[in-house]
Amino acid sequence: MPVQRFLFFLLSLIIFAACEEKKSEPDPRLEQPEEFKQLLNAHGEWEKWINAKAFSYAMIHETNLAWENHYIDLVGRKVRIDADTWQIGNDGEKVWISPNRQAFQGRSVRFYHNLYFYFFSIPYIFTDPGVKVKKTENKLLNGISYEAFEVSFESNVGDSPDDKYFMLVDPETGRLAWVLYKVTFFDKNNQSMNALKYEDYRDAGGLVFPRLMTGYELENDSTRKIRYQVSFADVFLVDKALDDELFAMPEKNAVVAN
Image (cartoon, rainbow, N blue to C red; front, side, top):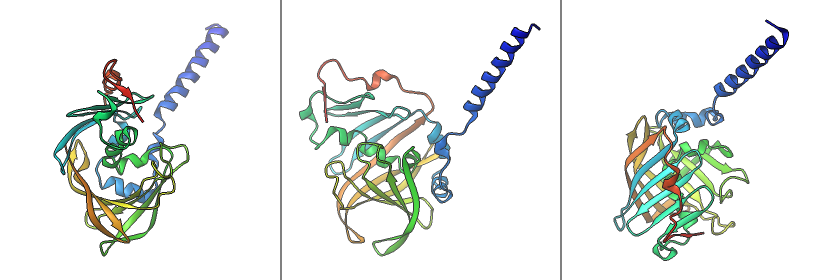
């Protein structure tokens, strides 16, 4: 073999080997603190969340029986929500609503578009880059002491990196029982915490998700008035990407929304 061909062949092998090595490197999201892994393991084969490309589910607001269908691109975090009188989407660049802003009665379309997706995806979503999960002292809630994890965010993560979460672990199942959280999207100085209860877990292809989530006002270490309750069904986690057209803003009867 001529020297030049040999060198070219050798260089090709080196490049191929480097590419293969890069492909075989484990996803950094799999590298989590061991105690957090125990919580994740209690929710099933959580590596499936890392490998999935898309996520969908149906959601009902139990207070008024309003329904929504949610579709999420897990790679680019594009979102589409179909409701009875409106559609909301995030095409990767902007958040939009159809047919108009008045169709949605909430305070902020941008705040709402991934709100329930985020809550529903805990604890899996906290494997994201830039999310820091650490074991903390037990938390007392309604007279019960729970093993707890504190969750915080790096400054460049999401719209509200000052948000704070505490995951409380069910002592019997090892699964997520409660999330205590503060929202800073509307007020960066907000310090008030709310509580979200996770109940009736159901299997969805090897992972478990709550069928019911109930939000409460939180005062000291006790829950008070129910703020909202939502239920979920038809949960699908798939390894095939959804069509980008699903998330595209309609050419007519749609506006960009904050």
